Image (cartoon, rainbow, N blue to C red; front, side):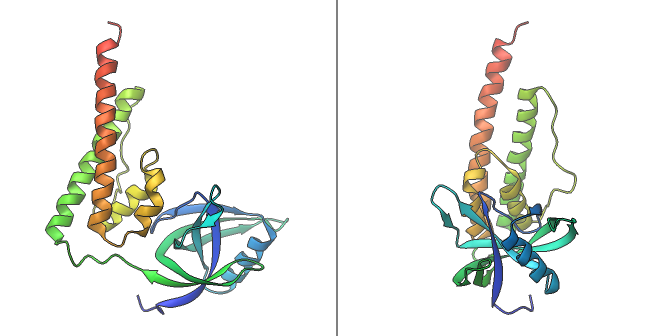
Length: 216
């Protein structure tokens, strides 16, 4: 990508938030240390690292996603509303500074798809896409309100795998960090298929029950 493989990056740990590439994340900046972080990155390349903080374990993940600031609106009291978009993923190699905010030495990570053929990836993406459509349709039936997927749903396997990791709550939410850390698109799609297929089966069973016991 024409960038150094290793760089220092200001880090913004967020409780139970996992940012994926190409996903939009709005943030409200109010803590003094993160106001300082914002001023610094706005003067430089508008980038900082979003990384999951586990409130239970009181620990920070080792893999996060670089966020680029698309829009920043600072109020009179110096609080700011910003809109960011996920870019490359990174791995934290070391923490080089703790104050006033955390700065990590990070290396960029990308998917390595040498093992899977493009045909296999396309087939996997097709299976995942169908499972996703089924889950959305069955959910709509259960709640009595038709639901649909966005028209701009990614069709490229890697981008689709990231979109599903970012948007599916419920069964996928607890697996988000693991999905982000995977560097194999096929492996990510397989895991997502298993999660979606399990959800699809549960929803189908509940739909049958609802239809069976619904008063005529």
